[in-house]
Length: 161
Image (cartoon, rainbow, N blue to C red; front, side, top):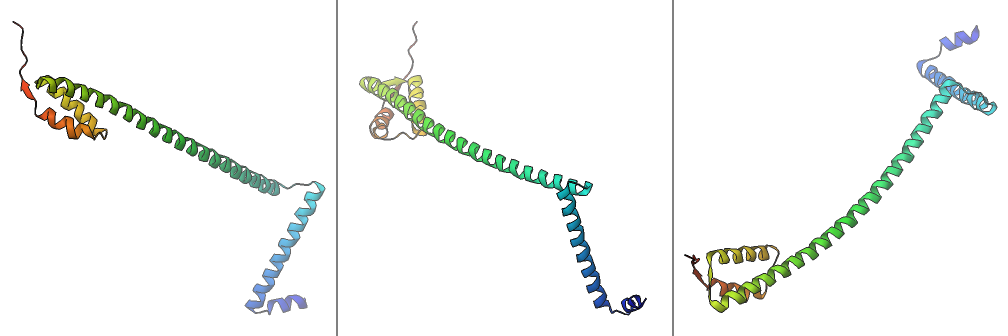
């Protein structure tokens, strides 16, 4: 009875400290009890649930790591494919440029000899020339071919009666 009287006479600060000590001792005792039960093979429902949640969390972390690694591999593969496509496009542009250049030279050779061309031939040449320029064409096509082609006379198409 004396202890109860002493307990009731405690100030708030001492009461809170006593309560916290009691709570810590209870927690430690409960943890010790759970540990001993696990050692003998007894598993409580809340302990099993906590373990399952921990395992689920660990599995999720492993899966996320695997997904991250897969995404990294995929990103690397896409980067390599992109580089290959760029190289293929560059090669295709070079091939197309060579074809356009060859065709423009053939037009130049053919029409500068006769010094004239029809409207259709002229339009075809300038369409090819624009495609050549759009692909980055330059050089003697601009310095030699273009100026001379602009000097050619345009003739009308002769119809056969």
